Image (cartoon, rainbow, N blue to C red):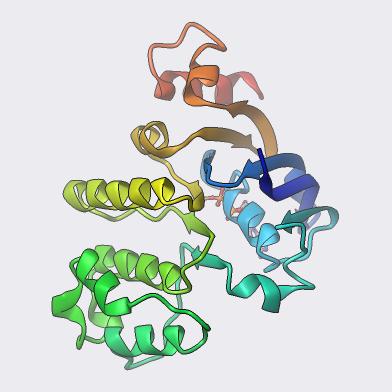
Length: 238
Ligand SMILES: Nc1ncnc2c1ncn2[C@@H]1O[C@H](COP(=O)(O)OP(=O)(O)OP(=O)(O)O)[C@@H](O)[C@H]1O
């Protein structure tokens, strides 16, 4: 299997505390890879290191064999990103954000179609800061998909979505996976991880607890479901 992301001994220190601690893992092309862990486990920091948004103190992270800090321009066209906190210009409308983002890429997706797919048609002329939390989440996924990326990074994408919207997003992500897209996501929803992820990494205080398919993780103990496995494994590794 071809790997498109390689993380090796990644360590990030904030204020003398290792929030990511010698973390190593690979993501294969076409895989949905989920990073799970309690609040503050280091999930976002790991993604930010991979994306070159922070400088690791030790180790490295590569996308398509390249360091995102040094080769941002080359990687830019190939990656879509949705982060937990998105900043938009003041007084900008949904359609204007999409136009601006699309203008940055050589071969952007048809954002009208994406807005339609995410049922955001009716909000095209609404100001972004007037959108509900869930609508903003959906817009952030539209924006991540505009580059027609090969890999998308989704940081708690479905947090704040209602049950129906969450399932719609799951189906969209399944379709993207079927078309060969690689997806790296973080989530606090076990059901979501179980439904979407080919492999899962459990992270605790920046360290790998276990990595594998849902089946691998379930078979690592006498667990009834993924949530029980998660709670037990996270508890054990004190
Ligand atoms: N710029 C920073 N300066 C200092 N500490 C930071 C900084 N960024 C993150 N941290 C700390 O690093 C730890 C890991 O944060 P991170 O955002 O990666 O966690 P997370 O697993 O994504 O959590 P959550 O599930 O709550 O989103 C936290 O304790 C956080 O307070």
